[in-house]
Image (cartoon, rainbow over all chains, first blue to last red; front, side, top):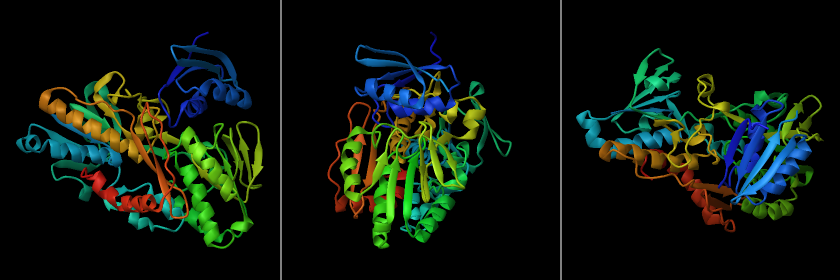
Length: 76
Length: 377
């Protein structure tokens, strides 16, 4: 699966990883896959929570060397 | 060396003044020329708009003549850039002139775009422009009771504003003696009431004490202005009597038109503050795509780094500092008290209990700002 865009939201407290993701998804096309990089320990929970509620799709979650790599497909 | 500063807001003005002081001898000898291009002959203190919306500042208190803020060795023109030609080290302006540069600073800022959300312009009040802040005050003054909904678009300028407006609304309706007739509701895009975890932890019990109700994971999709219903991307709908929105923002049109960055945000190195792939293009303030708050404070600290680095390039041939992500935001907390959030890329803010002296400091800063943009503070 090819990633359309990588958002580097490591080491940020404001606006924070989920805000960065929400912001990007507004401009993305349906089917785009965005990879969000985050060092926020909460991202592994709060990103999938929002993705599920809004109706997009989580297509990957892994932690590598302390960095979360969260892949989301825009579904609508 | 020709240094071109595009944008006369907080970041551009601090950089130009800071450079003018650091490079006084070089500008007098003609070795360096500092030029500023701005879209306006006036400079607005944007944080003052929140006070205008609550009748605590008059609009004319927000402005100074831009030329009066600048050092005399800055060549200032009210002539906004029409096209960036970064491959040629040139810009063209609305007046048709061509400006060449060796180093350019892009500090064009951001703008609210409520029209991108259906029904929002018709159905909501804002405080991000002078006209909208005055209109919001009039609506607040006329309001006799009911449900006031505050919702937040993404991305937005001044991330502390959503919290501050709730404290201000509570104070405002208490002072009018109708707080018991007003239901304050707060809708926030992510899963807690503020994006900064420590701000959320502090604000939640404060909201509970004030009787502010909140719903999280709520992103504005559209507004049915006729029936006064706010709809979310997450599928929920809520009614309101008065809707106040922190509107979604974009970078300036020229940035998008010239394909410098999606959404008008230019890809920027988070430490050097140079545009990706362009070592002689600095980007500061709201214009960057950095995961940093879009605030005057971030613009200020970035501007100091960029000015010092450009001056060092002139003097010793290389930059000397990195931007560490520093931001310092006052937080007006109601009851004539305030606190602050100071953080950088690696260290989260540690909020102190709100105090009256911090509120007085904020009120003082509303005046001290003019010293700050002159590059003196």
